[in-house]
Image 1 (cartoon, rainbow, N blue to C red):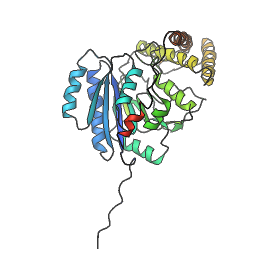
Image 2: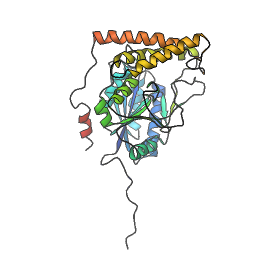
Image 3: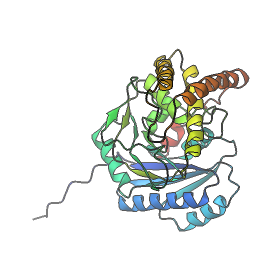
Image 4: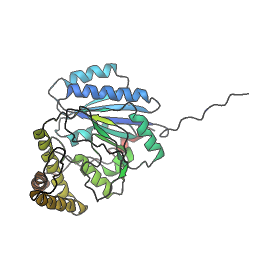
Amino acid sequence: MRQATKPPRPSFGRAPAASFIVCTRNRAPALEACIRSIEAASLAHGAMTSELVVVDNGSTDDTAERLARIVTTSSIAITPVTERRRGLAAARNAGMERSRGRILIFIDDDCEVDLHYLRDLEQHYLGGERLVIRGGRVELGNALDLPFTIKRSPEPARFTPDVHPGGFILGCNMTMHREVAQRVGRFDERFGAGSALQSAEDTDYLVRAFKLGIPIEYVPDMNVLHYHGRNTREAIERLHRSYSLGNGGLCLKHLLGAPWLLRHFCWTFRSAWRELWGGPRFDPEVSLSHWPIVSMNVLGALEFARCAMTSRPRQPEPNEIKQTTRSLR
């Protein structure tokens, strides 16, 4: 009698694959640690094939040399990409275009993924919706860094306009099915680090997805450690202003399509006045004020207006993202 065998393990279809997309600029040591953590996670869950696309956005340190050495010895397929147009959004677009996986995973170069990251991710995509943007938990990698640019909530959540989209899920740990990327399109290169608006390319992407009816979900696993390196209040305040500048541009861009963003600005303005009379600050743990948010939101709106009048974001070519999908079939 033939011995009974277990049914095959479910997968994402005929070509189960995930693409880690890591954009970097002048962070060679951090990038190497990031890559090693992705390699370890890929080996720990070998049932799900994965690749790594590393986009060098104009580094002047030894990033290229280190990456070349890593490629020759890596246990996973690594595709190095050089994107000379400055800006995180441009780098994300370049990585997305060169990726081949059905699931796109955006990880920042100063993050390290948990050993069981792919296992957790696969469970969500097998047991939940496919057409959704998901983000996981982001913990501090270094206890000496201040608790900022992290997401520690233990509770899963779905985005609604009652909360500001900035920080609901973080761009340093963001995943989506390729079909979502096809629907939403490219990142707006007027936003993001290295651009005129300095930030919010990920938040803009979430707003555009939400307007298309694509859910946005936070899950308390799919963990990464964020070694952001900011351990002084001055450094956090600079980053806080940068985020607020981008969010101001975001508010003007989506003024008609997502007017609830303006409502959040009004709430912040009201909280700023209350702060003058002893009301709570924006982030008591780091002692951040509401007033920089208000002023930088206004400046960001003006900067977006200037960008809108002087240049237009690059539009995707027909089927630009879809063509890479066919290679999986």
